[in-house]
Structure formats: C-alpha cells, structure tokens
Image (cartoon, rainbow, N blue to C red):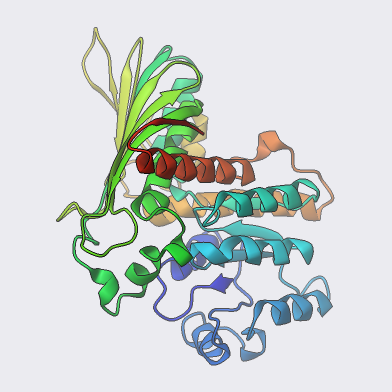
Amino acid sequence: MVGGGEGAFIGPVHRMAAELDGAIELVCGVFSSDPARSLSSGQDIYGLDAARCYPDLQTMLTAEKSLPEHQRMEFVSIVTPNHLHVSTALAVVQAGFCVVCDKPLSHELQAALDLERALRSSDLLFALTHNYTGYPMIREARQLIASGTLGRLRRIDCEYLQGWLSTAAENTANPQARWRTDPARAGAAGCFGDIGSHCQNLIEYVSGQRIHSVCADLTAFVAQRQLDDDGNVLLRFDDGARGVISASQIAVGEENALTLRVYGEKGGLSWSQQEPNSLQLRWPDRPLEVRRAGGAGISAEAASAGRLPAGHVEGYLEAFANLYRSFAAAMRRRRQGNRVNTAEIDWPDITAGVRGMRFITAVVASSQAGGTWCEM
C-alpha cells in the first residue's frame, strides 16, 4: 500500500475490503511521505513487520523486487491524495507490478492519459476502486438494462448528497477536508472530483451508455473555498437519452445519500446506497416490484456479488471487497500464465478512469464558460 497512514480514512477501508475474502494480504507499504510516520503507521495501524514499512516508494520497489518471487508483493494499492495517483502508479508499473488505485484516477486528464499509454504497452492489471459498482443490486440493475427489460433508455439521474463540508472544515485539523479542497492535491474539481465522479461512473457502468456532453453549474458556497462544493450537471448520452447529476457536500445533515434512477420505454428502476439491498422496479401496468440482495429470482451476476442469505445486511465494505475479490482471481490466473481477457474484467479499469477524468474536465470547463455544452 502507498498512503493510508495516520489520520487517513480510505487506507484502512482498502485493507479491510482487500482481506475480507482471505485472498489478499497486506505485506508492506509506504504509508506516509514522512519516513518515521510511515514506519509507525505500518506497525501501529496495520501490524506489519518494521522491515517492510518503507521510507519511500523507490526503496519499497527496489527491496520487494529483490525478494524471492514467493515472498515479494504482487500488486500495490494506491490510496494517496489525487495528485500522487499517477506518478505512483507509473513507478509501480515500470517496476513490473500490478496496481489498484483509489478514485478519481488523477488530478488532471493528461496524467491519466500518460498512465493509460503505459498500461496499454504492458500486460499488467489495473483496477480503479469505484466501489459502488460492487453492490449486488447495482449488478442486478446492470443486468436488467443489458437484457432489454426496461427497453430503450430515456432518462438517467444520479444524486449524491453529503453535508460534511457545509462549514470551512479545511480550516480545522481535518486532513480529509484540507486535501480534498486544495486544487494542488485534489485537482480542478472538489465535490465533482470526489463524489460527482462516482455518479458518472455508476451511470455508465449500470446503463451501458456513454455520456456524450455535459452542461454544468458548479458553486463554492463556503467563503474562500477554492473548489466547488455543490453542483448540477445536465447530461446527453450517445444513444439519445438525457439525464442529470446533482452532487453536494454542503447539503446539511446528509450523510452519503447516493441514489440512481433509470427510466426506459418499458419501465424504470431506482436504487439508494443507504438502502443498498433493495432495487425498486416500476412498470406502467403492474405494481411496484422490489428485488432484494440474496433473494429468489435475481440474476447470477447479482447473486455472485453477495455473501449472505437474504435479510442479512451487506454494504459498503462488501461492495468494495467485490472489486478486490475479482482482482485477486485475475491475479491468480495471471500467475498461472493465463491471459486475462478484457471480457473477464468486472471492475472499473483504466478506460473507466480516463472516462472519469474526461467527465471532470468537461464539467469544470462547462461551468467556467457559464454553463455551455461541452463534449467529453
């Protein structure tokens, strides 16, 4: 792991999710740019041997490559602030190791394209942890749409509301608020880089549609805040559908209110991350239908994403773990000398990561131009 030291939120989440199914073990890392803090974090937070808590990335890559193959690390999880994602990933790829990276892919589009080129010229695996794609009922929604059950899609809306940045938390001791509102580390977008990007990824993953162009209105409501903390974006899709993304981190009292609604010619569906085990289906000629994770009649794709019988709550960590479980299975195939085909990849990959950066870039450009339509 690179990042995830003292005070981090997402590093421990990655560790728990990766190790949930017993297929992956954290063995080493660089947990801070401060060597002493990296050592203490590796030992105190993750319980690792001091010898494998490294002071910097290059030292880790060199030391791990020198170990016998059965002892060395096999891939690296990158859980740093956005501006370090690509430089870290490029170094790891050049050293010959596979990568799992937190979202968004980068803090700027060009860096994402540089990483895409490096990966295309290698046989290394790469995953981007847009973890909401791992929920069983999101997999069910995707299968329903792909099978044509809803008919041709007409409207796709996604909303993600949080309230944790409704005050100037970046002026406090909150490290998450400080870097996520800093253009040098977060990139050109704040709210829309952090959670709006989840909406874009979820929409394209579930619907199979590509966003063609956007018309955005971003706002920073908190005084002196440099990046957006709220926004609304109109969407046009390649196949003619329309939609809206609304994202906010100043919606007072909201926690992680992510919702998705898709409407086709024959029916509609809706899903909420705060009630993730249920998928609602709406029809013009019959009552509301609710499908449940683990329940009878769901698709094999949705069933394979669950771990428990119906009625037992599964959530964020389990969805996150599904990405790592799939990545581990692909790593095993690769270790055995089998090529991993694109069709076998059921996690967000480098293509999804670049799509996300194109979305962020277009949204910011549209808003800065007063809400003009910009192509992705």
